[in-house]
Image 1: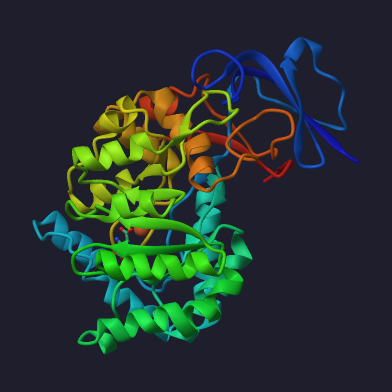
Image 2: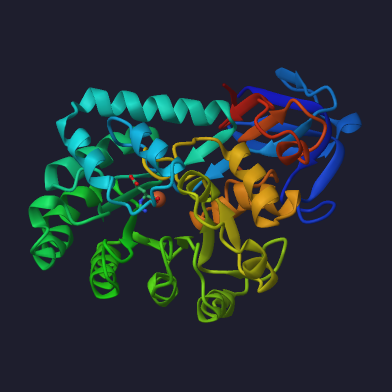
Length: 398
Ligand code: NIG
Ligand code: FE
């Protein structure tokens, strides 16, 4: 059994016991054995190990947990982005363009695209990345999208209900029947989660409830795209169904916040109470669609658990960078740097109902990021700068 010691860590973010909400420890070291954190303590008392990384006084954080990404697609929509920057609104209508390109692509082309984006994210510190289907929208194309996604992640999500494809435009009920029947059956072996785009122009609340319930019935966990383009019933539907996460939350009513905030359970974790349904905010989407940013302060002040994720996709948010999302959350959503870093690590883990990632405490997966900076503050303070010096995933330096 080979061990790895990372020592001389100036600021270690544990998200467990320690200083402040990030559980910070100074002058610390982390011992890794068999892909897990075996010991955390003062650098001066660190045990010997087979391999050694000297952090040189830099900050070390848990790897980012990106709990919302759409990586299985072909083509891009740069022209649509340019049109938006010239004043066109984002409507989600471009999804069908990507569906056409994705259906026309070979398995190897889709696989190469997933690997490219997954690699890009890893180099920016993302050690866990959820991957959705949703640009196939036929039984075969959704199944192959998830098969390919499952090659790169265990956190895979069936999003056959992304939009109603053109060939079903005048019979959405039939499409919902397809999603709940043969499409779910073909997708479920490769999926852990089910998701629906519950929005005007996509799926209404009754269709969304039916699809999510079908997914739940075959053992998939629930997540939902909700309240992205306008106010709507998606957030409350997510809470009603016990979703792990409601994602976007750009337009929230008081009742939405109340529903999220009142949905708390006791847990034995470091910060005590947390919500069962996490609000996952995706500031890359607001950046790229020129929409108003979600009101993170209102959620946090109400006690809602907040996660940050990229929403990486070719339409509304073509970034794979969690550091960029952290910087946006701090600058544009009035999250403190500590809140944003927590949301991008432990928050993402909560949104995926995982307790083995997003923290650096004994027993956790050894997913670590060494920054080229002395503090987590620099992620927001130095936006756009490549601050990820070293990524260790599952105990293995990448
Ligand atoms: O999460 N809103 C729905 N789906 C994606 C956008 C997909 C696209 O525009 O291609 C999102 O923003
Ligand atoms: Fe999305």
